[in-house]
Length: 337
Ligand SMILES: NC(=O)c1ccc[n+]([C@@H]2O[C@H](COP(=O)([O-])OP(=O)(O)OC[C@H]3O[C@@H](n4cnc5c(N)ncnc54)[C@H](OP(=O)(O)O)[C@@H]3O)[C@@H](O)[C@H]2O)c1
Image (cartoon, rainbow, N blue to C red; front, side, top):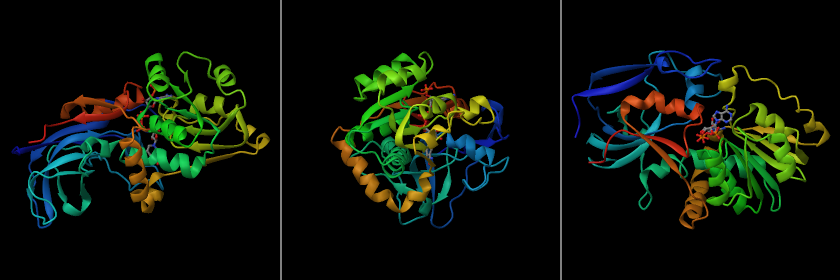
């Protein structure tokens, strides 16, 4: 079932050096697009949210293709085919891919993929999608954990961090998560099998690290940067690997300040390495298979935080930067027909 109008959210401003705000987006209604040969008309069912979307609006060089003010806001999601001019998909099929923030995208059939049988479609946006793959490559290829290592992960109750910790357990590490608030910390230890959790909003992180990692940190997987990164750098063990996956606190603090504990990297003969998931694209199929096995075997659990309503897309992205999401942030737009 398709409507006559298509609702969209566009980029209205660049949130550089500040928090995201609703006025960074512009709402508009346009007539529904007509599909050309090899195109499909989709009905967006669920949108996926990632802190990187703010970075895309900022236009950071060497990262992703530039965005322009007035562009449709980029975003991935799950959709249902409502009209097809492609042999690849028929009406009713469920697909995933880069849809943009609109209710009825008209896209080339080559830019979306079918979703595998036997898994909830939204899992392909989270643990079985880029979130799980980010955890997988960042930890296993950059962090290179060994059995017995002490792994500390920040943003631990988030979509990526929660998978990192669970892969760490599979790799035989002791795992400590750093997250905001008691509820998130309790979930890490009681549901996900983390060995410890530190509430960075209420605990003294540097002191707690001494208690829960008495021999230091062998692998630190960082999603947040800022004071948490600095405290962890102050507590690394010899030959530690510090994985820089994300630095979400930079949005709160504006310009990122250098961590004053950085020289511990020299004393402890350690490395700090950043990575971008897209560089591992050629290895996605094998990694995806392993993640699917771990999920099937109950070794990796995941949580979804599902908000509702297309009109709430900007507010839903803002939740990530306010620490309001508990699990993979999704927005339900419509029911499957
Ligand atoms: N390198 C790559 O290729 C790549 C790919 C994908 C994602 N990433 C990065 O991975 C990180 C996690 O992404 P995600 O999608 O899984 O999001 P997420 O962790 O599910 O959500 C973001 C979380 O960040 C925490 N946070 C927000 N502001 C903070 C602050 N000032 N200080 C400390 N923590 C703060 C909040 O948790 P609390 O309640 O615990 O504060 C919030 O729930 C992001 O930084 C993202 O950019 C990197």
